[in-house]
Amino acid sequence: MMSVAACGSSDHGSAASRDRSDDTQPHKTVLKRVPGVGDRLWRQVPADSRQVVAVYGAGKDSPDSTVALFTKHGAVWKQERSWPAHNGRKGWTADHHEGDLRSPVGVFTLSDAGGVLADPGARLPYTRSSAFQAPHYWKKAYWHDFDYVIAIDYNRVRGTAPNDPTRPQGQSKGGSIWLHMDHGSGTSACVSQSESAMRYLLRTLDPRLHPVVVMGDKAELKA
Image 1 (cartoon, rainbow, N blue to C red):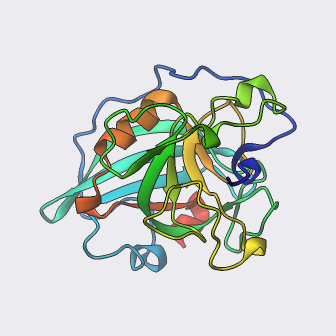
Image 2 (cartoon, one colour):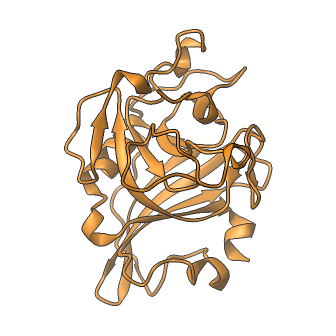
């Protein structure tokens, strides 16, 4: 069983509602590409990807971000939903290492999901296990962080459960970077959002559409 400390352990932060009414209504805007993403990262989005989860960090050293889901329809992209979110407590980095408290900037596939709770109807392969449970020596606000998780394919083996501990680039490069439920403040490296947002993504992200996450602070995303 893996340690979940890489994804959510923190010494401070306040509780937030597990299912805030923060989901925006579906957007009508039609786009030629996902906005706010420059050529450098956009070229890393696989040509067959038709779903993009964009994480727009408020700043390089900020734990605050916005998550938006975009779907490609024909030759154009449409923003489906967006939600407030949190990222690493110290912000973002293009060279993530274990314990730096920053989320990795980049484009990563989304292949596997899981959590403490039963499968809510996920399209990605879903592993339910008590092994996801956050340790109860963490603050109570953090206990439900991993009720639902979607693995971000950073330094992990695709096609395995999110809590598989294998790290192909080595332990020092960190790992266990997930989309998971929010506790109201920054994470150790993951991206967190409300329960309703997680349920929506789990039910919507489709492996047939080759979903990816494009994540970073806004300035780095545009570079």
